[in-house]
Length: 230
Length: 249
Image 1: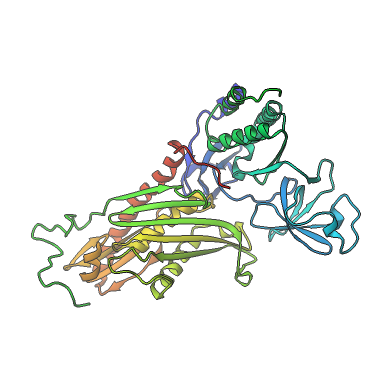
Image 2: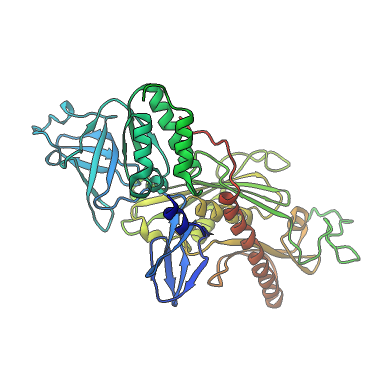
């Protein structure tokens, strides 16, 4: 993971309104430009790329983006749709045409009811943030059993790790099935002891998301606390 | 308002105030960010004998629905004084004064938040005054903007706030309780340092134009110091991290 760390060696925490650069670079996410100067818009870590400057936020709500994989919770059932909470300020309707089953009008309740957990994809977000989601893609489905943990959506990339290194470590060392939604919800299923271990590891990642060498630390933690038989 | 003890000297012979401050001196200010686990963002401010807590929730779905704006988020501030925050028990619940303060703080914060990023939502800011000793609206606004930044809400800048006023015919900074009660004027100022804008300005009492301008300049200068304390509080939250934050149910 040396290559990963060297890039992030100079981690600078910035505060809203802080001047990041006077340049013609593009103002990336978490920043804004005014009069040729780029300022931070969010509390986060400054990140300088060859063509743009951005701030990686340390906290904040999940904002749905087209193409994101999310773990949703059914919070309402209509006669031709379900209302899904995707852990953002905007609950989104899941229409019967967007599920992999053939559902007769008014029979939605036979398939999913309030409290069910689903794996969905965001298929569209319009300018007033109306979100449409779909369950019609491979791997998308209703999630039965297991448990869901929530963490700050800004820390999801750390749970996944560079090219999925962190999530791969978690999966192989705990033997659990894990789905990480971009919305900060993580679904875990496996042996109880292993699930507990996975949750502890995720909590560790959340607490130390801004530190360096996290994957190594988590690997060490999992090895020390490994449950026999995995 | 009458009632002033006749022998009360707000400024002594050496030109010092009741608590020994010079006219242009602020009370000691301490800010801590991220003090509440359940809130999206929070801050605690100790400013002299004021103790103020601010919590931010959101952006979240706006209720009641008729307040929703399809183009931007609503910044809704709720200022409240605890019944035990003052010497005589304060009758709990919203009153004329807290409505006014909630409104002006909401307006000051709306000015810096990128509300257009979150259409149809509301960003709720709760300010709880635990101990009051004059200047709680400034302390509340200062705490609220730190809490907003802590919640990850995109903002143009932080808002810093201090009051100036006139006491015993002298323009002074950051009035204490006796100075506020028995002084001649009070000007709370909310200031955005980066753009040099004033987003909150009130005046209670009478001042000449010169006195007002002197007070405003004094407050704006002090806001820059408050701003540094705010930035420091936010940076400290992540550089020296408090351990032992358990996950909620």
